[in-house]
Length: 429
Ligand code: GLU
Picture (cartoon, rainbow, N blue to C red):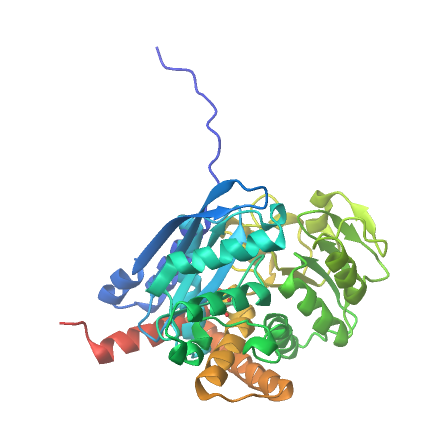
């Protein structure tokens, strides 16, 4: 007798599967060299560390941290550290791979890495977070370094955390080399070797891309309505710069709440409220709270996912009304979600292009530290704008040449650069 069909829970596609599928598609389209394809299909190094920290209550807790180094053909590994309870080896892997494409596309002398700690930072005091960060840095030891692997902020990490990493790393080295190690991390506070403008670099880059999109498609940003998912560094700065272009912020969603205001939400007031409320937007008086499920279907022109991966999926992509999705987050659109958006004719400015202003800013911070220079914010923003605009042009041209979407175009530009490097250099021995 046939066994009765049992309904299997549908396993959601993880970020790693998404990045590998995007990669395979682009590699097929461009005819990527099979050897290079094999190399890039694997991560070079995967580090998992378990380390103890004494909490404020005197008890010891053991934390798990990760650093995955995908590829360093173009330069030292580069990429953020996130503190979140979705951080695991698979997530770090996927995010590290996206960093390799991102730095290659931006024309930077960096490879790709990502890591973080499996933790909800809201459950810990500032003192605990400092001890956790310092002990994590110590556990990573010489697996990071200014010419080897350079972390930066990502989800739930910030300049303060970068300052603790830089200080811990340098303090474990000989005092005479202290300032040689300043650029072991980027995204530091300006007073601790940080770059003026690094704080706003990602959001600035998102809006630079939207301006290029607007010019290309002949649709002015002025008067457009936009939605932002995630009100961290990327969400806030994107809203800040987009409002300057004359667009209106209609709704915001974060982990704590979703709300809208048809007359427009003031990102400055929201930021002040969020800062005063442990980085939660719940209860913000300048808008009306709505059901989180309503968010995706709200009428808008621009949608900015600026939170976590796998947010735009088969479950909600059909409801999206935007003309353009500007991916401030890494991997916010899964394969199914993307197929639906494409069918609807929604433009997607892909993550590895759209949010590349952040790592471009990091490059200038690294360079500023290496050269012991100090640059003005105007110079920095101009340099970021220039690089983002160049990448946008290359992506559009590659997409046109291969008759593919912009994500695949972006992959082709990045992968060609990596392929050329391997072809020129050859493989040791
Ligand atoms: N975490 C950011 C990203 O995903 C910045 C990385 C960096 O600056 O190294 O691109």
